[in-house]
Length: 126
Image (cartoon, rainbow, N blue to C red; front, top):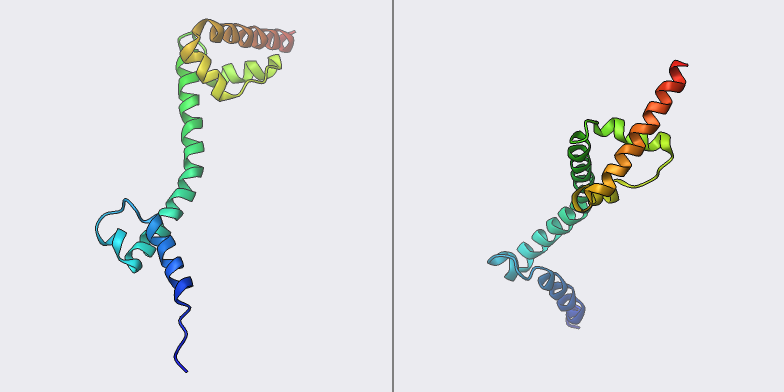
């Protein structure tokens, strides 16, 4: 009895890997073993970098907010503390968007945060 290799399933499995390897260079696209190795690494990088992207965007938003608050003579940490004291819950993404696109609205938040900090200091000193 001849050896059964389950050819349709093997071909489908290899084709799946080679389809994912489209756009890769040279043998990484055409040769199954090279393609499998490269696709595996690419998937690992994609998984890792989905997490990294979140960190990168958060640091970008913080940098933008910090730049906008410093133009109003306030630091980022004092600004965020003032918002917390004032009871305002706006995420960093929206604050960064306001800082870039609508500085007038952002300055209102700065005034609110500054006022809340001053009230807190007055209450602490009294």
